[in-house]
Length: 446
Image (cartoon, rainbow, N blue to C red; front, side):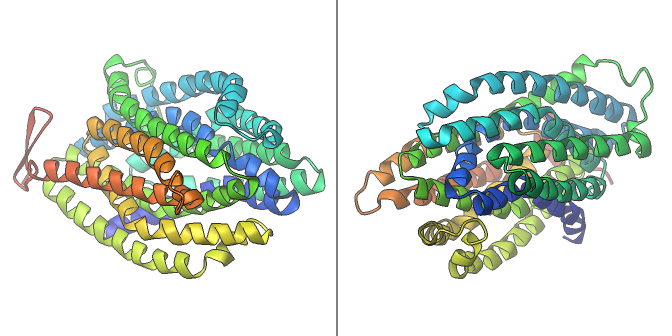
């Protein structure tokens, strides 16, 4: 447990600071410009998530495969995996960024973004698309370093760039009156700095990033491994993003107060996701390394200890959201009607946090084992849930608007149950002496 916690803490701090990019945008715009500007940024959340998800799954997949090679002690394959994942994480985000830039208007229109918000939403989202390759580069560098057991280095550069983003946000939005566009420009500048500083440090200091000409060659076998695992992860994240877009379409049918409240609660949920997500990423690296070293008994122990950590965090967060919702929403906006709506929304979603935690703990183990099927299946479950449940609940007169937030929790419950069922199926095939997985039999090392 102490090993997982020590590895997770720097990642958690880093993930929280990375979330501060968008969080600071929302707080600065919400206070200095107003609720409508905040709603404009919120209207882009699910779409931006979709485009970034298409790229970042490959970085996560490459990191997991690197951790498996690292666990085996195969240094040559570690370097080749770092190199070939890097090629994918540069080329693919450039293509996705260009395509998403030109799809901004039709996609936001398809989501029924209110006319009064559309112009600002388009401007903000297009700026974020231009920074996509830099976000992918940072996530690539940090995923590789985590796979090699270093979760601290990415944090230092991220903290600096986040502080810079905060200062630039205030300068552009408040000082230069650039509104939503200023928030987007500040974020992209900060992302560029975090990407190149982290990658540059890794190349200079980490021995696995010191490549020979042979290490730099394109390796078809390793690239296919990265694509085979990263592709379903990207598809999983993309399906989740599409499901969020379906929910956003339901939200956009209501007035701007509801959109602003949904934006604020979504930002808070992104923060709540971070401890779970960090634990999942740490568990994936832990599982991948032990899977590579053929120590499957440690995989089972890692799951149990991680589940206990998740449970403690959940028991702490639920009463905070139930009792302090108004104070938390007040960080984002000043309008009392938005604050009241957001506080009640948090009291609804927080009762489902335990299911959210189960999703992430199980996902960490299965990703570390290379279970690409679960990634795809879990995404499909979320898509089905978010297309059907919000429409069904908001159509019930006694529930109405609040069906938006009830649907969030119910979809978490659906995904959590399917994740647990998938893990129990794997658990029966894992024992301390041997494991049969994907047609291979691995024997426990003495």
